[in-house]
Amino acid sequence: MPTLDISNFNIVVSVLGGWVSLFGLVSYLLKENFYLSEALISLLAGITFGPLALNWVRPLEYAGSTESIDDVTLVFTRLVLGVQLVLAGVQLPSRYLKKEWKPLSLLLGPIMVAMWLTTGACVTPTDPVLSNVIVKGKFADHNIPKDLQKIIIAESGANDGLGYPFLFFALYLIKYIGDGGVAESGGGGLAIGLWFGETWGYTIILSVVYGAAVGWVAKQLLRYCEDHKFVDRESFLVFALSLALFITGTCGLIGSDDILACFIAGNVFTWDDWFRLATLDEYALTQTHD
Image (cartoon, rainbow, N blue to C red):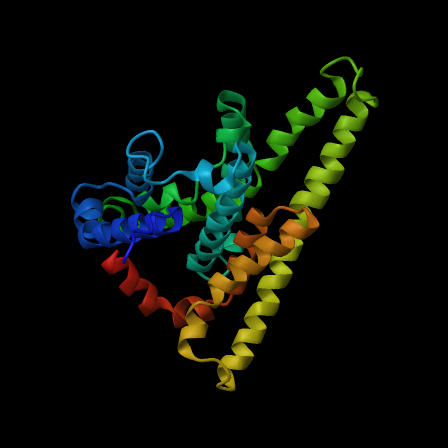
């Protein structure tokens, strides 16, 4: 006799598939007519389907503990940001970071410092996912100048990784001088040394170098394989996605800044505009349907 299998897996897949399908049917209406972002709508959907409301999605039952939920949330957040930042780098025109280094330096230097002093390190970086609301779609095309859209993409991509120095500056000071050196010896000198060496050297500079190297090698390999007809169109179009996953994982292995590395890699990957122009029609079609 048939029996119902009301397992967590079946419930989650049903809710996810149904939600994505229903949202897709009215996505253009919500985003272009009511100017509601995917992030806000997804947040409201998560609250509705989660333990605080309908309780259809019960993450504590899957993970087993709050600590495991935190770990899963962190890794999924890294994946989302990694993919988004590679795509943000790819969207920028040829040699954009080099051409627009002056306004970017202003935004990533004194303006970020001012934001840090007034709001705090955790909220200083501009979220690259949320910034899509004002750089894509009908509202952006009608109200936001193209140059401003590009500088917002570049700034939101770069400053996510550059938020580390502001955060770790406070953390090192708290660790080494916050309790008068009782728990950790070394004082302010060691704190500043670690801040420059580990945060700026290993986390920031290494991630920039690594992202640029991987982006350049990936571009050369893809260009060679495309010229020799080794790669099909489907694999060509999703190459940036696989590149984001690779950088996120490898940077995580060495403990560097995967977020900044992904953005730099995406920008170097399309430094000569070859990949961006080769996929321009597909991206334009996707944005039109979105």
